[in-house]
Image (cartoon, rainbow, N blue to C red; front, side, top):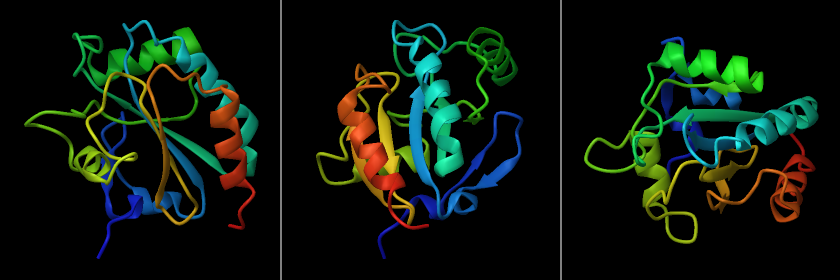
Amino acid sequence: MAKTLYDFTMKSIAGKNVPLKNYRGSVVLLVNVASKCGLTPQYEKLEALHRKYAPRGLKILGFPANNFAGQEPGSNAEILQFCKATYKVEFDMFSKISVKGADIDPLYAHLTGLPRPLGGDIEWNFAKFLVDRRGNISERFPSPMSPDDPKFIAALEKLLSQPR
């Protein structure tokens, strides 16, 4: 049976187990994030998306990862403090994981193991996976694409318009 997002449990940045089935019925955006990357300012646009679309059912899940040029070296506490102080992040943040390599987290092993164009190695920080209300990966967007890019917003709006 094919897996969905709901088949995974992840640790929140505070260390609590979070079954991703808790997000059933929501449109979910999964993003591997980093604090010391040229793309880090995307946090601001992600938070703007969160504020605008959360009432319509969007949930953003940030997964810190230190897989690219050591750009997320901090502890979970340091990452959370940075996100809150610098970008006022209120969307859901999770414990630091690996998104590629021998120690890849099972969720990201699933995501990258999907057929292309959804699957394939994570290319850099801030790769984006958009998940429909049934937990299926709908689209993948590349790291450099801004969360306010019209193509991304159109895909998001399409998923949000589906019934819960």
